[in-house]
Image 1 (cartoon, helix red, strand yellow):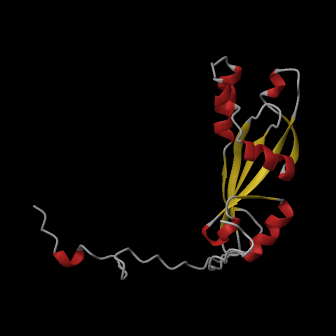
Image 2 (cartoon, rainbow, N blue to C red; image 1 turned 90 degrees about the horizontal axis):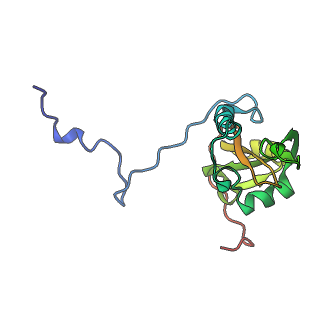
Length: 172
């Protein structure tokens, strides 16, 4: 039979004045090159499974695989980088459209920039400005609205920073 725990070991987490746990202090990470992707995740197997189902005759609702958000389509128009690859859905029909890659950034240290679509040049500059943020690359077809997450990775110099203040001209 296990011995009962004492009441002193139960509340081992640090609690602030408000009764909520204090946030853990960010730890500095040694990063040799802030612009080099780390913790990379590729989603090629997931894409292959979806396309195998499509080509194999699996019945999809038109909105299941070609459901790009209007904001994603607009980001593709202004921030998209042409890949030279033909859309896997459009290639089944007569219209052959090239895919575009759209890059989004997310992270606690980014503040108002989190969730923004960015260009590659700006991405390299942000890697030196912020300690850590995650980058998501999405492929988009503007004609049939196919979209799929291609990869995600982390950039940054590893030095924890405070969230930058919101610019005064940014409306709520």
